[in-house]
Length: 151
Image (cartoon, rainbow, N blue to C red; front, side, top):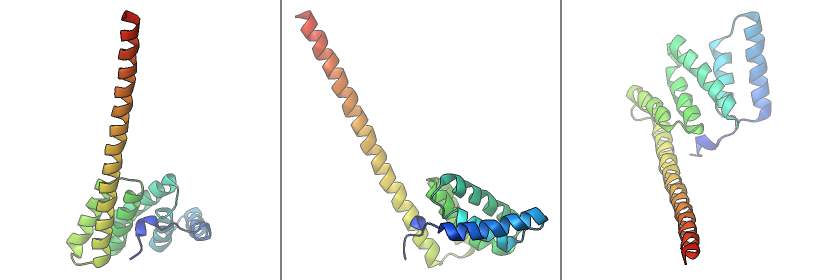
């Protein structure tokens, strides 16, 4: 399975579903389908603002339309993972797996999220180590400079 966390929606699809959503919103009757399709595009956007908007639309659907709960949970997990809210993403994965424990697509998504958490944790540790080395280097230079002045 391709990493669904890397999927980016085409601008054409986003515009198409956004147009339908806003037309229905303007008329005052947005269908669950139109809202879901727009949210589905938004969570696959390359822009975090769009992703957050998609998450809000999916949460609204989750609370108002129980028939689509599985899909909403799946894309809530993807959206949150894409904005690096990994704990929330895993919460949605676990909620999905309570409904359908053997779903391979969701189990794969869980592994992908965990892998990203581990990778970014290692990157965070590397950044911290670089910062500490830089601070120690600056401290060493000041100590050396002070020692030269005293001599």
